Length: 460
Image (tube, rainbow, N blue to C red; front, side, top):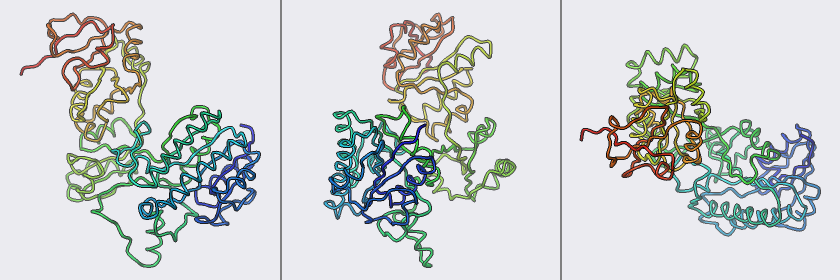
């Protein structure tokens, strides 16, 4: 990677200052601007060219940005809660300042613009937030961020400039502004504790927010300047953890050697769970006691049995890896394909049956599918730790590819004339059960290769 010139707006701020410092360490030239409304001059690292310029001053900003290859737009008045009371100021410093920054960058013919958006873009969407979710902001700050994203896509598309939208989680770390009462909740609580005062938690205390340490985010953020596979993408940035809740799922996660971060145990259940607690202690996994109600909130359901293992993100497989497992076992490929299965409990039950039946892997679409939530993992009794799970964007295409490679497609249909016992299912199949709705799953209905559609067994 050759050295280039990176321009950072908000360079005297918490995030902008850290980004500038990291790019300098990588050997790049760094320049930046800040109006010092929410930043400190001391945050600007030595070696960075500093311009005390407001992003709303288009002409001065254009001049300051001269020679830049990449622009990181970090500057923002991040007053989400306050924005409902000061919408004009927030909109001016989010939307107008962003448009001015993009205009200055285009005038200087930069190669790429990286826009730091906000989790506020997701608003009323259900957690966990995913990049493919449509934005549903619920306050002027989030609305402003989404509006700025729209301007970015439009202007860069018209003028041929590469763009990336990054969406960091709540970042905390050294040099964070600690005396602002309207943002940076971690810093607000630290400030109160330093004064000997009690931090305030609004609501019932069960709400969740995801935080990420600045040093963990920087490698991802700096990569966005040069990587080719991020152009034109919205990318969430932050820690990614998975909850495995329930006695049997936790046991199976240990058997599968999932990398565990910590074990959560309800105090009232600790004696009954002592075997798992001792095993975690042997593996030097931190044990954290969490009240049952809080554990329910964290896991998202109440069937956790007083225990949950926090593990690193699951690694999903590919169809090629499923076929490789079948070859390794000396067996014809046996693949389960799920489509439009809407209930997590049903998903887990199906996965449990699939693992017991000897299925080599499970294909399912990235959309129109029940999430692999802690409730689904619990219903699977830990089978998810031993199955190869393959999310695919084009389910019908993946099935066609398997058919071309000699795998027969069998789609269950609740109205089929033959039962599963009557139909000829010889050969290496991949099986599609009926969808959560009536009849065959949509992907199978669209697939000409799906000619066998037996009726699934049912006693009722």
